[in-house]
Length: 93
Image (tube, rainbow, N blue to C red; front, side, top):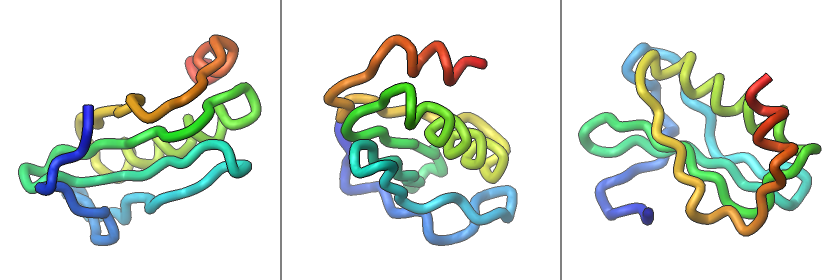
């Protein structure tokens, strides 16, 4: 699941008029980024390692994107190199 050339970084306001989060790097292990396609599809990309320590921050990031977009958000986890089951469980809480 790669990114095509028809995506742009979300440095501009989203469809609901709120600012979407930019790229963040958590503890040097996990990078989260938010892209908007030309059709308006919002994609949050996870790259690196998602562990118990980064799960809450990752969840907060995704919630902020959902709140700003007001619609469906696609999660792209193809670039995760590690994800502990505890992180997924923690993020569901």
